[in-house]
Each structure stands twice: as C-alpha cells, then as structure tokens.
Length: 543
Ligand code: NOJ
Image (tube, rainbow, N blue to C red; front, side, top):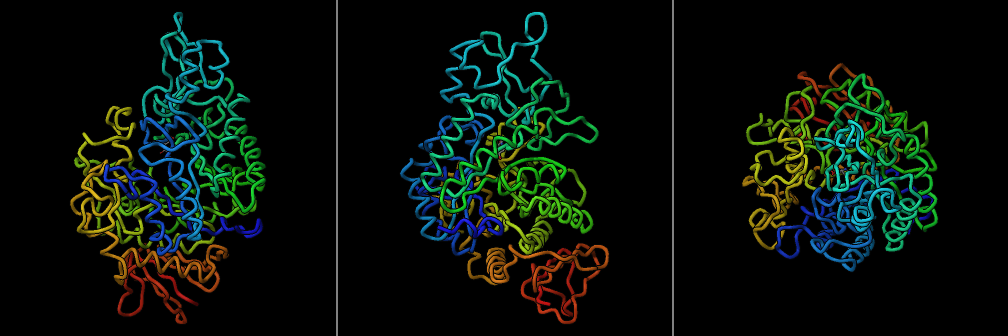
C-alpha cells in the first residue's frame, strides 16, 4: 500500500475497462470478471497504473448496468463477489489500482427500495427515497414539471396510483432523493462495503446530478444528450451542479480518508465553466474530475491551448491536478470523432446511413491527440481499445442497438453502442479472441482483425507500441507530476514544455520546425525527411 502522501492519483494513467466488452471467459458473448482478471497482465505490459471498471452490479441492464438493482453484489452475467475479490487481489499483485463505478443519482426500478416505494403508496416513508410528486392539471395527469430525460422524452413517469417519479435518464432509472438521510447513510455503507474489499476508489456517475433545486422549477431545455450542459443563454439548469452536492462529497471524503492508502473519488460531472468543475476537486472533496471540455474540443491549436490553459489554471487554484480524457463508453471514439471535418457538432452515435468518417485521418489525428494528452501534467484516462487505434463501429445494424437513447430519442440519436463493441485481441480467433466462442453481445465489424492486439504487439509503428512507448517515457520523465510551460509557435502549431520534453502538435498544412537542439524521442507518425513535423502529428523531443 502506498503511504498517504504519495499522491499516486495525481499523475496516474487509468485504463477504463467496460466489463461487457473487454474479455469473455465463458463464451456467452458477454465480457466478465474472470475474463478481466486473466487479461490484467496485458494491461501491466501496456504500462498503465490503474483500472476503472464500469458497473458490474446486478442489474436488468436497461442502461448497460448503470441501472443498479443491488450495490453489494455482482451480476451473474459478470461472475460473483468471489470473482470481484480475485480481480482486485490479482490487480494489486500486479501493481495496478482498482477503481469501481458508483451510481448514486439513480437506482434501477428493480432495486428493492423502488419496488417497496411503489408498493407502499403516496406519502409513505418508502417513497421518500425517490422523487415522487403529484402531477399538474386538474386530474394530475400532467407531469410535475417540464424536464426532459437526458436520453430523450419526458423525465417523469406516472405510476398506477397517479403519482409521478423523476428519472433524468431512462424510465428504468428512478432518481434518488438525496435529501433523505436514509439514502445518504446507505451510500456511506456501500462505500465501506467496497473499501473493505480493497478497492482504491470510485468513479462517481452523474456526480453533478444528486441534488435538484428544491422547487423543481420548470426548465424547458432538453438536456444535451449525455451532456447536461445548458444551451447557450439558458438559465442555470435546476437539476445539475447544485451547491448541495458538495456536502455529499465532503462527507464521502472523510469516509475514504479513514482507510489506509489513498482511496480516491473521481467525478463524472458535465459541468462548465472550469471554475465550477474545480469545486468538485477542492482539497476536502473529490480527487479528480474528468476534463470533458478537453474531450469536446475541436481539432485546432487555439481552442486546445485555451482549454488546456484554463482548465489547468482552474484546478491549480484549488490544488488539484487535471484529469485528461479523450474517449470513454459514452462518446464516439476519438479515432472516429477526429475523422470528421473540424468544427462539426458533436455526434452521439453513427449509423450506416450517416456520413462516414475518414478513417485514416481519424487515426492519424487520434495518435497525435493521444501523444499530446499523455505529455500533459496530471492524470489521464484511456478507454479500452484506444491503444489499438480502434475506431467506432459505425455500421451496426439498427436492430442490434441496445442504448436506451436510441429508442427514447425516437431514433433521432443512434446512441453509444458503437464505442462499446467487444474489443479484438487475436486476429484469427473466434470473436477476435474476445472470448472462446463467436458470440459477441454487439456484432464486431468484419474489418477488426487488423486492430487485434496480436497484430500490433512488438510491431514497430503500431498504435499499441506507440501507446506503450508513450507510457514508458511519460513515467521515465515524470511527466504526470511535471509542469507545463507554453512555447511560442506559429499559428496552427501547439507546443509546450514539460520538464526536459518538448511536446509539439502541428494542426496546419505547413510543416513545423523543431528547435535545432531537439532530440526526438517519439512521434505519432514519421517526420518529414528534413526533420520537420507534418500536419496532424505530435512529437516528443528532448530539448
Ligand atoms: C453516465 C454514464 O457514463 C452513462 O453510461 C450512463 O448512461 C449515465 N451516466 C446514467 O447512469
């Protein structure tokens, strides 16, 4: 165990495992905990410091496990508690920390509390655990307010006795009432349950959503799907980023601090501006908050320089590191996102009938983006498969789609299935080595053999080896714990120094010069014959 002062999380590279799609040990087409445990040594070889696992709790799986029916157990799809214990101890034996997902904003409608609340009826203490209200209109047949679900459609559902309950996400995900002492006590007990089992931290789902404005005032704007940011000019949303959430995390921090080692809290909070987000990582609250502004940034030097600078400054003001991320299970993979023309609005899923990305350009930029990110001081998150250069699966037939956003948006948004397809390990094995059979809960594209790990391991120039070299250099040069200084460059070039390394990305068509004394350590693509840096390339050089 590290000492409380070693601050491992300030510079850690944390690899997100999406359990459904990482490795399947029993051939049922669904990834599982024994599959993960068997592959941990591959992650050690890659060179990451920690893993974060998306939820593996019992769940009806209406939102891929973010609808939790029991916070103290494992869904039989993924194994059992013994498998979770084994996974944690094996990770620790390999020197990897383990972060698990905690979903406190809502439960599944199959959670015992919700079924009890439905049975107990209006006015009962059981209903206090959720946000039940009478409807509007003479017969209460109108929802209590005009809020929209993030996945589309209304955020209220009427139950047979006439009351309505709030669900900011799917109808199967009723929002908890964080004004209830019982809810607060239960989540502290859940934290302890997993801390006692040895986890090193929690990624907190919808961390900005727990507290709603007490008046439940109308707010007519549809939540940006999976974003929750207010559209330009809208009044502040009454359901996101209320001041009351901080008290919850201050309390949780005291619980975590009772445990040996440094156990951490990571906020999934779609909050802007950076100063508001930084409030989640004040010294007595959480440790990290994903920097989604960076993830959302266009592929362009000026906005990236501004966002890197402003988010680092906002975090520095509260003494926190910045937490960089380019891909996760909710967004189009960056190897695909960056294959579209710069400045196009963010896509929330891609189908066969949609404009397709320029795959070569996307991968080239993705490699450059990753080197830019991994050179920055702070912590960084990688999403499974990005180290293979994996693109989004953009042609999943619609009948296979499982993301609730697809149905709830009336098929306006294809949703997130394309970034969740089981990943390829072996080019010539069934399901590309995802599992021992052909089964895969989402179909794998026929072209994925080329991305398989066994086609890339020890292959010079492969995306996998690029990631591995970057992680080794990052550790060797102490980049995560370093400090950034901007370097003056022509427009369309972004360059900074971190310790003895210069990190330079060229976004423009004109090749960029490196300083005369630069000794190139790594570059996302080969440099020009004259040593200049071509467009869409990042270089790490010693200066
Ligand atoms: C954010 C999670 O990352 C996403 O996958 C989920 O659908 C929502 N929160 C609701 O839990």
